Image (tube, rainbow, N blue to C red; front, top):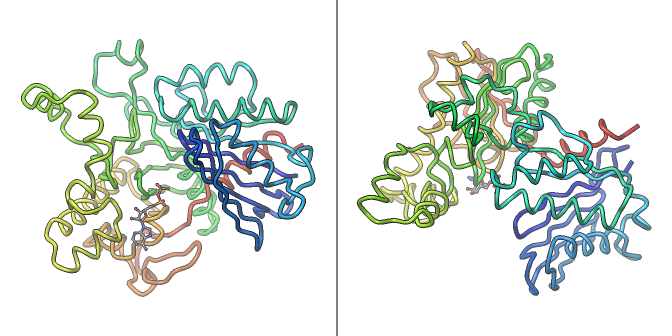
Length: 397
Ligand code: ADP
């Protein structure tokens, strides 16, 4: 079975073709600057790696470019589209409609459309990808996998905000949470790694990339997560503030005359590591500057670690205890010093990192000391594989 996994962003399209017999990726690619006449398509299959600049005015054209590469007589990996047995789409927002991945039909498309207001940059791209596939590969089963659905198991006390109830009932303002596919994947892998059923574990999973979120996963179900109504909430991130006192926004509006658009840009694009360090949103650059004695960079790093430590602490209490803490994504998988800082001084809580193990690179691994009651794991995320597996389990037979 061949499954095409598509991740359509506002101006990009990423794709991977999985052979589900082997679980391997046969080919993959990225189209950037979709919507322009100067898009870039990078395609990889085995030894082949090629780049082309071309006009891709919309997602349909990007998917056509992907399909042309996949079926190319020389570097393609399939003869024609009939060899794609099913398609999996990453969709950012499923609102409170979708608690798991679903086979796409007209009703599902209508629901995803209803959620556009909740994810105005992302859901239209996902819909464009779905519609393009309907046009190009009519009859091929399609599955939607939502970033939000894994967190639909949160109890109301975790997902409600203390606003008047009508804001929840009429406007659906609540915590949704994101990165759900990644949290679900690493939780599953963590259970496999520990050789225990996920139902026997209390996990805290830390997805730390450009966007960052932490989830509390009790018995395999998300019971709380740091991103909220939008992906701006929670942890300090590359360019996003994470949680701040909401009255700061009123102050900026009333006393500094900033518009909603200015404030949106400030909170999403100009803050976080970049804003505090005044250098970069990339933890590597900020880390290097801090080591060279740059005080703003050092503070940015200290705050970034402290925000995460706070969430790890509060989720431990929320679940009563924690069996394993899992790090994933760009920072979580690679930033040795940052992992150490986030869990520093927690020996009394039974959380002890082994410095030597922490410094090692590799795939799924444990970095906690033998005497650490809480396991600390690093598990590289693989959202595309999780999507492909969902597709297989929904339409594989
Ligand atoms: P995205 O959220 O865009 O998918 P990634 O998961 O790729 O992002 O994470 C990107 C971040 O990972 C970068 O901002 C960078 O700071 C961080 N990162 C990657 N490699 C390292 C490393 N070796 N040390 C520290 N940080 C790293």
